[in-house]
Image (tube, rainbow, N blue to C red; front, side, top):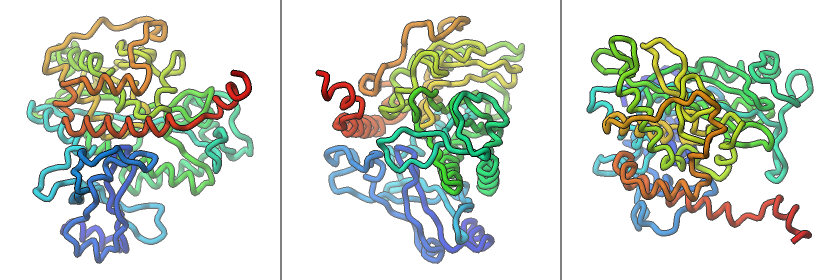
Length: 444
């Protein structure tokens, strides 16, 4: 705790936000006065926090965490210690790891699931390098969830009405907001790179610099919170829903990924002659083979599946191709040292820890099992047959039958994830939508 105490003294911190990422990627935890944080050994939270759905419900029965509803010990990771830039008083935040009282990790903790996969890579002498790209929408303040979302008003006093892909002027509409976002990111040492305007009305994309998978998952986790907080201060909402607006493209979290040798630092996707290696092709084959069963992680909500449709910049299959944005796995043009695969399937609504764990797990199995991919697709992927599950139910069924996923991600996690998603699906299914009232009320 010495390093943490020094940080708190240096920044004159008065309170600490002790947080953990739950299954949805929501920050849970406690706000603790500095004196109490320094004096206590650790924070405790019920293990059931990990099984809380986005609606605040829990799967039936206590078998997933123990029928006595036990606590877990939350241990601060000093590498994640940062200031909270939007707080009125000097406030720090630190991400915690979830442990049992005997010191073993909580198997269903998303941060542990990613650590588990990364440990497999380390055992091989490999290190994944990732670079996430996050799309999100800015929308007008919406107090009534029954009303559709609308683009916010920018500096011209008029909302966007059409596609403004890559428009600098469209980004400039919200310059004050983005100045705050970049300032907040700088204070938190979030390594954001470029900002672009995407296809949708007031849809933006911010890319991260490539780096360590766990560090990037932490940064994405904090970044989502940062953008939402900054938007609120400018009287608008920022949403990371996968498909927030009817008739507009969905929002993705594309992940660029490569594997380097820990000792030499060389990209294992390229050989000495500059050509692609068997490990490169095996990685792609693993993604092709396992992605259908991983879809409940890449598309975790009913809304997520609305994004995945033809001709909307979202893939419908597991084909791969060179610089082909219509397929699930794109290989960008790059020199041999930067050879990488872009997974275009995850929605931005996914948990970053689990999405990175899932895509890296698939690639790992493909490399270690010597799998071979199909030929690269050189035509329009939207003209091909649908290869992904069509809904969450189908995806959960595939995940539940996959022995490989249970082994690499952990059987306890897979069981808990399926139970959580089934509970959320049941809650959604009980709701009667406005579409049903509009088209069925007086016509059937």
